[in-house]
Length: 551
RNA sequence: CGGGGCGUAGCUCAGCCUGGUAGAGCGCUCGGUUUGGGACCGAGAGGUCGCCGGUUCAGAUCCGGCCGCCCCGACCA
Image 1: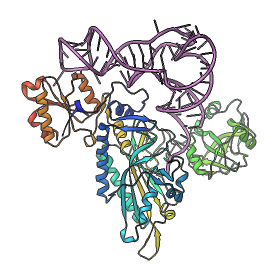
Image 2: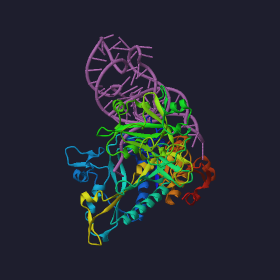
Image 3: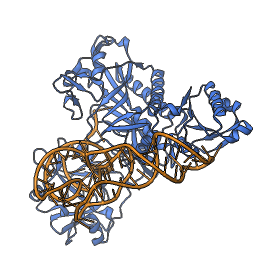
Image 4: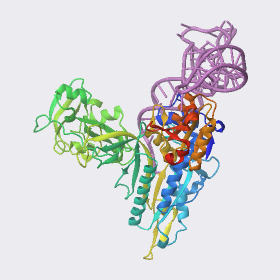
């Protein structure tokens, strides 16, 4: 089909929007793909919607290929379904005031409501999906389409009779997702997002390296390890220890309150010091967390390691529990629980002495204090791969997909059971699989752009070919567009009354994969310029040859 | 929710400190010259300076409150 730019709503901007930071945010707004309505609220404009629909179609085809059945569940949802599962207390849920409805963040409750019609193991497995609006009262939307409060999500739900089936469904979806991202030309890695805890539940994130995003992808240079930075098990370097002591020795360290200044003062390796962070549990007890001096404590890992809702201790609590203040805390002589990072199992470290201005050398776990060990450190640049010891790369990434095994979490409270072969009534075992096409769009732009604009992969480009019409060459441009359209391509025909430079700039910005230019030269030789947006390669082709060359 | 920043024409911004007739560039409309990488000349249209209140003869400007948006952090099935 041919689409005439002169008649389209294609508002491109010359300048970056003032409030944009992320490349995808800038380019999608400048190119007229999206416009902001409020914080985290975006209209996808006609041009952007063409891309969105192409991403959707790829997702649809791959979901159908693994037996997915498309349906449509309503946005407006009875709150009672969410009361049944306890998720009603989720703070991000929008409630519709003075009604018994909510605007849900996802559809597990609703889909499980329907799964109650499944009676027998003979009907399993099932895989259902829809593309539907999700509303989430995000505390902080950001980065254009990267994090929003309302968006269309493809969410799929599987139901199985046993763990083996769950695993098959999960893996089928994982493979489908890999194909989806490959077809969209998004470089994405599936990484374990959470493992082995909470009753066998697990989930996998798909992370796309990007110029901006909210996740950190940790990846081994040899390709045998990839993880979300939040949970990556990276191996830190081995410290250079000073000479071993038979028991801890006090050393006076006036005014030394940081590990860096401590290491400098003593002339030792920063990695041979330890850092203490006290937290207070709901019952008022103080727990001391210990990591190596060159590491950062992961608060997320720490709070995961302590049951209940803990928080950093106040100065008063610290003084009461340790008899010293912030910079001089240590595990020796502390009566409460100590949680130490795994790195502290071996070796002797310098730690605070619980006296202001004094530290202890030669402090050894197991001998001088008895900690509980846990992984508490944040992985960092320079760490090695836990599989092969290779160098780890750290990249900012966008979470483009998330697949989740939730077991009977929803089926039990909602009473979605089936009769198994053995005559037993059992809860259905479920999984959910989410992709946001809008976020995928943003990730594609993050990965496919240059100084002039977007370079869409062919599979998701808003139009296949952008035909630039220069003055005098109107008829040959029409002819070229006709040949391309006859070959089954969607053609954006830029017939606007603008200068060549502006049309070229818009073509680069909008980023259709192929640009065809018809100008005065074309009148002489009947040929047009065909330029590849991504590589910049240009060739001159006869109009009649266009279809076969660019299809 | 904590920290920082911003709000003036469709867009990007200046003016505010030091109160006195609201500006520039781009875009838009009309006319003309141009036309293979964001041209030029001329004439125009376009603004309750985020909102409310206060101080003042006088508020875009000073003071107070509120709202909105962006960035960092917390949070993120």
